[in-house]
Length: 369
Image (cartoon, rainbow, N blue to C red; front, side, top):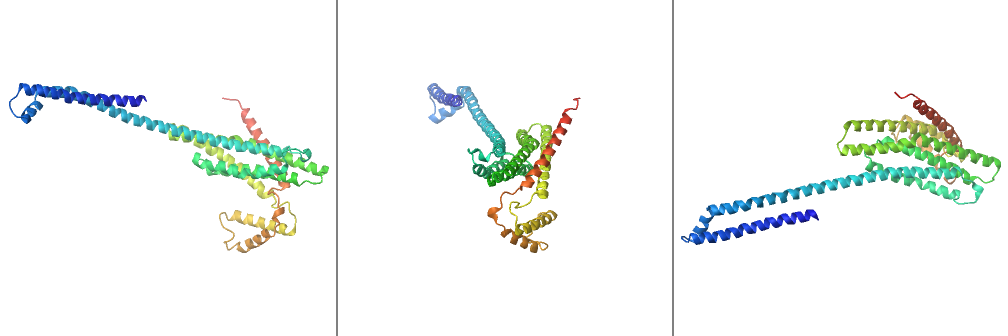
């Protein structure tokens, strides 16, 4: 409102001065004409325009008109600049809020998975209360698209994130999800209620507990911290500030991402070495399929990026793999992780977690300089 009043006030004075300029010159001309009646009107007007009185009146009024005009012009330009600065500031604030929202959504989806795994860890089938194990399995299946929605926003909010970061996050998330699905599925399949069966479920739940706690300890802080540092880096770049700090953050992100990727690769290797595909089916066709699956895995490790369906050296073998795959009774396959692998993974990762804790503890015990 003040800006508008300022512009109107300036325009008012410009118009008033122009009116006065014309009025004073008209009055002065009539006076000049009365004092100099000789000659035609055009001669009188020309002589008046050459007179000192015209120059004095015009000069005394035209200067403030020019000053008011320039002031108005500068105000308009300054207002435009200020509006542009306000718009840029608003866009930066909105972008910052969107990035924080993305970080919060990432934390939220991770915490939701933690809560769901906890429900499976402490689930008792004979407690006869909600939620049922079927409800938990349904919620588990809905988690993958929810996590994908969150990770898909990273490329827009944090374009500086290394691709290995998303790969690592996906591995940790899927490991928890697949482990939880296996334990929940085993709980659902338990029928006889014998002491042996109950003991087996308790062992699986304990294994899941160790898996989730270990992954959370080893990765959760780094996963969220990388997003925060990426946000800080983007803000510094956008503001053209502190190149030294930018370089420090880049190194911090790279180091954390490298560490996360190493953990993800280690889990992947354990899966490859110790998990048995379609472990909940045991018939000759599935056993033959597992052998072909192992052969295909080894071939693809030696030939990364190659398509086994078109490669001469493996086309025939893949046809056999495909044939055996179609013979599997998929309605009985169950989850991807086997019970044996869940127990192995729990032992391996909890040991790695304890080793990492001791490493951190040893560093913290060193005297500060």
